[in-house]
Amino acid sequence: DAGITQSPRHKVTETGTPVTLRCHQTENHRYMYWYRQDPGHGLRLIHYSYGVKDTDKGEVSDGYSVSRSKTEDFLLTLESATSSQTSVYFCAISESWLAVPHEQYFGPGTRLTVT
Amino acid sequence: GQQLNQSPQSMFIQEGEDVSMNCTSSSIFNTWLWYKQDPGEGPVLLIALYKAGELTSNGRLTAQFGITRKDSFLNISASIPSDVGIYFCAGLDSQGAQKLVFGQGTRLTINP
Image (cartoon, each protein chain N blue to C red):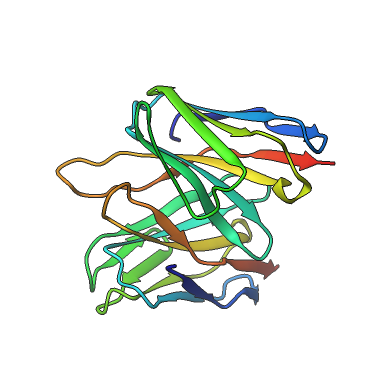
């Protein structure tokens, strides 16, 4: 299994509070991703990173920010949590070389409930 | 944006039966991936396909990369109880940061 951990694994928070989720990898992969998974929507990309301090928006980035100060850590922040951000959040990592894309490997997920 | 249509959405089968599911897209992808997700866990990669027309096996699983590069198929032979779960197809945009586009998933239930 790819060395990916997410913390916390479960969190309940109140509307309007800031929340930070952490993804940590031990694989030294260049690319890291944050997804959310909701019934009826499958997995949707929030933000991704293609290197330290290099990030970009995904499909559903509104209300989220990210930071990557080290190769191994990718943080997802909800500046002011809303009930619509109740979801399961997955981190993924991937590597590529010789311009050939490679597979993404997923962490165990964080279940976030915003009350 | 890009979308993948995965079918069927759910399947109820008897143990020992073969399973087929597919994924179609309006866009071309250069890589197709198939994942399985068990309850409470993250998706686990089953098979990766990199070349149009490619047929790849992983034990009882066989997947094909459609020749048009707009579809892919996954077959499971002789299903067993541990095959229960949700199967996702994903197309990989090979440009830039390799963003994955996921299908909605196929939920597989097996009656013993």
